[in-house]
Image (cartoon, rainbow, N blue to C red):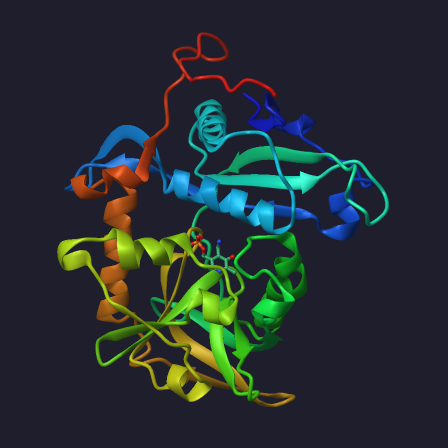
Length: 341
Ligand code: PMP
């Protein structure tokens, strides 16, 4: 069965979900997107239940709209319709676990987007561990790249838009690849020109010092506010609850941390066990974080996210949306169809 995609209100075979080189997005990067994960549900003791859920679906759909608004791309679908559309695509693409919704400007040459159609599409793929190359022991390696995030007055950093990934994230990732690191860290600059480490190419950053967790504040540093980090900070309860101090590490802070971790939808919670930084154009210094292994706070955060997203904690069920099953392949779907508008 060919995978399906949802394009402008219709389910279509994935191979038909193409766009043109003359689409506005191709030249001008006019798109905003989301990355969402679906998981097989587990019982509290780790047995598969046979059900599948999407993690933080409504939260992602809401951010997608805020991102689109930042670039003045408006669409007529409601969040409920888009939630139903994601579930519809997943129900047709059995086993796929990563969802990529995209809003983009379609057919139209010339910068002016005024009469260019805004298009909405949702596709899914199977995606395993996001951080998987150049690992160090049981964690990732991260390069402190030369890339500097722009301040709020210059760029809508809260929006998950293609422009930010083209201008900063991709270049950071290429620097990391060249340095044989799993990920690239980006910097931010305060008004005096002091540098801080603010996030990763596609994930948020946290450090642990003496048991306290510090993360750069998204508004202050004009970086994407991660839904995963938000959930860890504000969605958890009881002994899962964590307190995060809003502070971006300097390079010495980062290197002196007991633990460093990355977090995001694709990344989940990934320990950073080795950091590389540049002391001259051609001199990279590698340094282990702590004892070079994943630390207890990071391990606990990863376990909390795992239990929540796999449906193993009753109290976190409200962050999960069940993926309906098709009654029979191709017809008699019990999935609510979204009308095309
Ligand atoms: N920062 C950046 C630059 C990202 O691309 C992502 C992934 N969306 C994140 C942070 C983490 O966000 P979330 O937890 O919502 O996936």
